[in-house]
Length: 467
Image 1: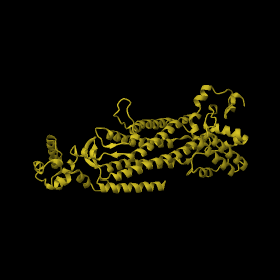
Image 2: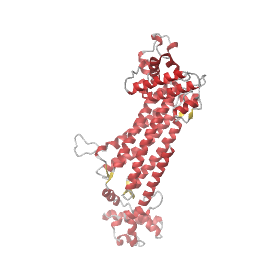
Image 3: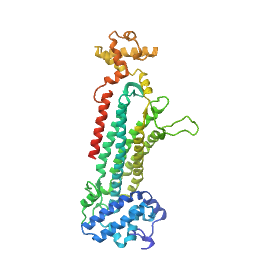
Image 4: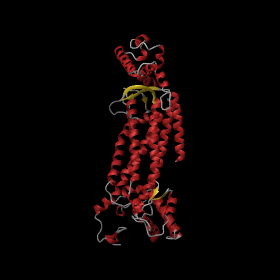
């Protein structure tokens, strides 16, 4: 082959590709990450071709043995990646032909790089989703265990970041867990659509060879072959769906991170994070910075950007495959890595959180967090809610003036605002009484928190079984 046609596709061309263009259009520097999946798909393809009679058994065995050897070379760092060969697919095919001769060129029968790369990405995504799912499960397990352990630990609940009503730390953690449970379902749902096989769609229209796509799908563990060859090679909505999941998950982790950062501050002093999840300052020796949650919070925008990049990549593409789709891999790879690492960090860190119970309790005592309980008490005594609201408002104003919480006032002080108030009011004005009174499903009562933790654990176990 002359220099002018030194590519696998070069027969039609009369001059070599410009050196800059070759570098600009090559993807091997990043898509070599798909090498294991590419070899996996090629072995299944060769097996199927032999089964339908396109390859002999000897040719199949030579191809499979050669590909297995190449996998070893890659794993040992001995493989020589070539930019002129453009991508992971042609690098592996060229090396296979070097090793086993002309039989290596037969491997590409009945397929195209279009369906090959679409298959590789789906195999890659399936593998990574399984790893991410394991980390998400580990995080949820640790969060549920911590919530159950802290079912009685009282802290202030907030709206507008202002003290609202007392809750338990376990209840707050289970709110986080509910967010992650929905994310978990989204991830597993995404996996179903990832696990569809494009291989056999060839360039865009299918192939004239007597392939059996169901055989290949079974060999690769796909649920089924893709129904339409045009769609199979050209859409990347499964990657967009994953980055959408990733963006929602990181949004949740970022919200959690924000609270962890606040709670570790001297102003809140609600929790302590072990030193291994924090760093110090180069100039201020007293500092203990919550770098892990801060960095997770920061990485959220990175994943959002990848979602927008993939949506924009696909929005104007006509059917079928276009070179634009080469740009799907780097944002997808980085989104995968970022999600996996953030989940690992959280799964390691969350079970190690140490609540500062006295600080939490004292904070819940400030800000008149049982004001709603006093209003509810008055309503149960027959006072209209709007009147009860005004009575409590006057009581709070008095408390601000005298620097007393509602629970610290005497019965006589409270009765100056309503003679309906009696001695039993103090049962609802304590923090313990307030949280215990919310004793219904979804409520913050310690018994309900323990029951909710048990249900969450059972639901997680069922999800594991289903997947």
